[in-house]
Structure formats: C-alpha cells, structure tokens
Length: 308
Length: 308
Image (tube, one colour):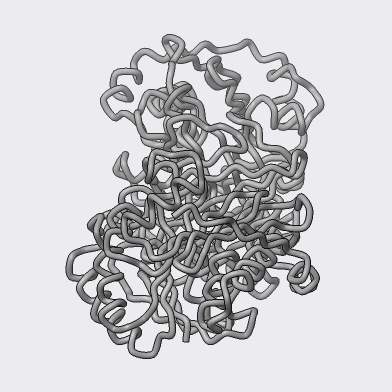
C-alpha cells in the first residue's frame, strides 16, 4: 500500500457567501466540510485511482473526530494517531460574486513528545507494508523541525522510497536526510536555495541531498531533475479553474508512477494531467476523471540536455 | 430561577488575524471558542451577577458537544435538548490592524417536528420552577415562524412573565401572543412597525400585544414604553469599545430588575449600565464588573410625559 503522512491534518471547511465584505455581517449560504491536510488530499486522489492507501498523522478533539467520521466512508485506511489536542480547522470563504476564495488557517494542536514517540512507533509498523511513503505539509506546534528528517531516515532504513512535500525549515532539514523525491513549488524552491531559476535551484536541491526534485511551476507544469535526466511536462493549454489541491494531485500522480516503476516522462504526464484535471473540477480538491483520461495523452514532455 | 431559551444556539468562534485581506491566505494567530446564542449570553451575564439561571434550546453534533463542554464549568444549568442536527458556528474575524470584526453566521441545523415536540415538553417542565423566561434570537431551520408565540402562550398559562428578544416575522408573530416585554433595537422596531420614530413605533408595538417595550437605541441608551409610563435611560457618556453582546447584557439587566420587582427607572439603569460595561470589556460579550458598579449611579433616566 501507499502510505501518506499528514502531521497537521485539518478539517477543511468551506463557507459560501454572496460576497465577502470586511467588517460586515454575513449569513453563510452553504457550509461544506472535508477531511484535509496535504497527505489526506493525496490519499483521496490515490484511492480514486484505485490504489490501496493508508493515511497516518495526528487527529484529536471534536474536529479530529469529525475528520475521522468523514474519512470513514472513503476507500482509505485511517491509521491516524489520537492526540489530546484538537485538530485544526482551515476555512475557505468562497465569494459567489467574484469566484475568489479567502483562506484562514488555524495553526494546529500542540503535539507532546509522548504523542510524537507513539507516532514514530506506529509509523515504523506501517512502513513494513508500504511500497512508498509521502510526508506532506506543515508541522504542528510542538513537533521539532527535523521531524521529517527523522521519518525519512526511518523509511530509508526500512527500504521504503520516500517523497517529501513541505516548505521552509522542515524542507531544508528534511532534504539533508536524503529523500528519494521532493516536490517544492517555485516559491518553496527559491526560499530553499535562494535562486528563482528553477533548473539551477533544482540542481542545488539535489546537491543538498534530494535524489530527485520535481518542481511545480503552476501553469508551466512540472520540472523534474533526476539521476536519469531532466524533463519538463506542460499541460496542453492554459487551464482555468480552482487550483486548490492541484499540487496534492501532482504528488498523487508521482506516487502512482513510482509504485508502477514507470519511466519519468510517464510519471510526469500522469502528475500534470491529474493536476490539471483537479483545477478543472467544480469541487475544490476533487479531480475530473474524464478530463484526466483525456489529458494524459496530451501532456507535452520535453527532455532538457543535462548541464551536469 | 431565570430561564433563557436559545433555539439556535451557536459555538461562537473568534479568529484573530493581523489584517483580513479578501482573496488572500491568512494564518490565524489566535482562536477562541465560546458557547453562544443570545439566550446563552444573557444567562452568562445573569450568572455573573449571582442569579440562578437555566439555559434551554437545542444542541447537537460535534459543535453542540463542544458548546456543552464549554458551558459545563459555568454556573449555569444546562437544560439543552439534544438534536440529530449539528449546532451552528458563528465566526468573528477580528482584524488586529483596524480593530474591526467581520462576522460569518451559519444558518443552524434543521430541527424536526419530533425534536420541537420534545422541546416544548421539557420547556413546560422548566417553567414550573422559573420566575421569568427570556426567549432569545433567531429560529433555526425547521421551526415554524409562530414558535415563539407558542412558547409565550405556554409561559402565560404557567403564570411566568416572558421577555421576547427576536426580530422579523418571529417577533411579529410573537408579539401577537402578548409577551410581557419585548426588547427590539431601532432597526427591528422600524421593521416591525414601519416607523423610525422610536416612541411612535414602541406605542405601535404595544398596540400589537406587547405589554411593555424596551427599545435599545445604541449610544442613546434605552427607551421603555410601559403601562406605568415612558422613560429614557442614557449612559453617562459615549462608550467606546466592542458592542458585541451589549444588547444581551441589557436583556440580562431587565430580567434581573424584573425578578427583583424593581421600579422601571431602576431596571433601566441596571440594563444601560450592564450594556455599557459590556462595550467597555476587552473580551466580546463579557462585562467589566467594576465599570458596571461605577456606571449604575451615573445612568440618567428621564420620564417622558405620556401621550396616551
């Protein structure tokens, strides 16, 4: 099975309002709730593609209970570790007038050292059955900044390939533990390396310890810098829609390609098509299955001459 | 005891953000949660004044469970009736830069006819021990518009004085059932009567069935139109602060004065002082006890010659 780790899971709430006016009072027309956090989103996409997938991380309090209730009917195994703190909420306020979204993210619960120890124990057991593991998103308060580095070392020791999708110091510290793949976006890559040139920055990130780097470049698609070569994959045309979850769908595509041991161009095709099909879907974070199938053959992949 | 009814209770959430920017992403610096809904707020103020008070209404789902957990340590008896639906949230986004607040209110759960019947049964039992009852706030979906009229008739039959604090059609229908006191604000009174002249509108509301009308006029204080005369009570000076909960504190003051059988000028003094002390308190909906004591003797009450 594919294992995804979301240390800072979230109950994703969407409020639909006619128009968001600061300092006014609004009646919320429609409330939707979804289990969230990057690794949970990745797992949902993988499950929809027919993969056996397990989610782990932390869940606690009333929002944690709702999150688990919402996970229950999905074809995803819930291996979340209970904590005393309360799982965070994220709130997206969708403005019916402009179509834009205002996002408010709670920081998340403080995880105790005992809870972290109990997580690493459970994670070690889950690795025994995992074909690949993805470590996704921000760290909740209380978790040390080298936590992903620790989890990467555990995965490497178990012989399980590991993908890291985070930012800031957790990314910097994680890369040094030599993950198989990191998937930063252009901003995260620039923050890590100091360079806004994606090719140069990706080479720098590989030098820091990442075996392969797949940078998501928004409408420009994905740039993969790997031991086998460098490729850029672009969607066939500009895709209009809601980009929420597009990055998580790209991660799902990369994982699916990795477990099938596909060559890089095919993995990138899958990731770009899933990502574009997510932007096109009417519900944020879902993907349009028909669009995905149609896009798969239309993603253009070009190989870059390696400067190394 | 004093009984307060909140059919559409709420979990009141406050998010503190540096500045609310529509269509941007925000990290929430601070999250606070309080049990809410008008009658719950009124009960909290009464309990702080030393009154024995019971809250009833509906609570359900994960947010209802949190609401009840937060009520538990307060000196308020929880007689909320469980429902299958989920208690609504209200969200106040407090902007640290401007000090202003953006409010988002969920509609609330749909209450079934069986749940309503079970509530009226429990309400009837609670009335046996009540010295006064306050019916507060909006109606949740599924509750018929004459619900407050029904509860007023039940209270009158039990010989319990009843205060109604709502708006729109529930106020219009409720007034016709002859409550002892209604407490509309200027807008609610104008909507009910078509007149923006508070004295004229209050006489009209009395003509529709309310035995007494106390209109809250914001910085102008309270205007009471009663069988014993007409009075206006004003705070000693313009009060700066957060007006959230000021109306609920005025209701608490009116109830406290009513159970003590105080003359109207004293009831109004209490209500205006509590209301102003709520605006002055740093936490929305709390009141500043020292300010309340200080303000009590400084509220100016003038009697209006009755035009009737």
